Every structure is written in C-alpha cells, then in structure tokens.
Image (tube, rainbow, N blue to C red; front, side, top):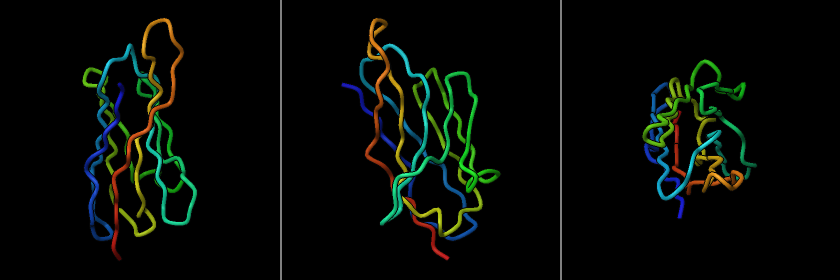
Length: 121
C-alpha cells in the first residue's frame, strides 16, 4: 500500500509564509515526477508546481517568485515553501506522485488527501 500524506497547512494572514510537506510511505521501487496541486471551493484543481527526480521544477504563473518546490529523494518527501501568501492562494493543497511499485511495472499516479491552506486578508 502506497500512501502520500501532506502536512503543514493552516490559517495565516496575507504576506505570511507556510511550508507544506508531502511524505510517501509503503512499498515501492521509485518515485518519478512529483507535484503540488490545489483546489479552491467551486473551482477545478490546478497545478501549482512540479519537480522531477533530478530537481527540475515548473511553476504556475500565479505562484512564480513566491513558491519554491523541493524534494528529498532519500526520504521520499517533497516540500512547498510558500511566501508572500495572498487570499487567492486559499485552497486545499494536494500532493501528487508518479510511483513505480516494482522495477517491472509502469508508474501510476498517487494522490494525498490534501491539506487546507487559508489566507486571510
């Protein structure tokens, strides 16, 4: 059983910072790409940031310059440092990972349950 668990969400004021963490656990061979997505009430889930195993990153235009994604391959973890938070960043943030269960299988998408980030003005 593979699990992704997010942590670090909370209620903050505009301009504050938060650091989210995503930890993968269970039995698997390797993790390829990882990413953070978010879903605000009444809106579709959107991509926030991604990182490859080698550390190449991409960001949504709305968070560039404010958010930084990083990962710790040795500990199967990924982080999202969020600075200068805005009320429009309020959403449930989900971790996504492409995980190969064994050497012989293709990777599959796994999702965490999400962590709530609320930014007050």
